[in-house]
Every structure is written in structure tokens, then in C-alpha cells.
Length: 120
Image (cartoon, rainbow, N blue to C red; front, side, top):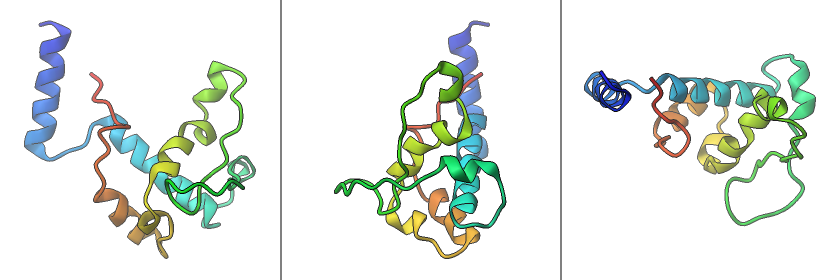
């Protein structure tokens, strides 16, 4: 079997079962952790790496995170760096949620195809 066939088979199985890809599941879990850190539901040292942006842009949500310079490829894959673009693209109804449960519900309604690629 070639990789293209495997990818199509994997994608069709996910669709038939109504499941997200593993990458998409991880992205959603990262977003939930980011929400918990920002709202002080958890104690972690990552909180210092997540700072709100001071620029007021018209696009995105009202709780945008600051995107600092990435000095190495390794740093780019760290939690605080990989989640910022996805977080900043979320709508206000998600980032302003009052509870973790509401946040999870709001992100479950979103289409993550731009951020989640189905990997084999």
C-alpha cells in the first residue's frame, strides 16, 4: 500500500466514525490547557511565557497572545509557541468563555481543518 492510499483510508475512517485526527485532538487539548493557564485554573511555569498582546488589531479575538521571536526550531515546537497562532485565531465567544466546559463546547463547534492535518 502506498502512502496516498493509507492517507485516504485513514481520513475516510475518521469521517465514518465522526472522529478528529490525532493532530486535531492534540491541538484542542493544547487550547484547553492554554485556556486553563490564562484563567489561572492551573499552576505552571508556562504562564510566564503566555503574555497578552498590547497591539489592538481589528482581526481575531480580544485576548490575543503576544507572539515573540523564535530563536530556534526547537523553541518553535514548545507549547507556548505552537499554540499562539491557533489561540489568536479563535473567536471571542471561545476565549471569553466563563468555564472550561463552555470553552470546550465553543471550540468543538469550530472547523479546525486549517490547523489540523491528518497524519498517518
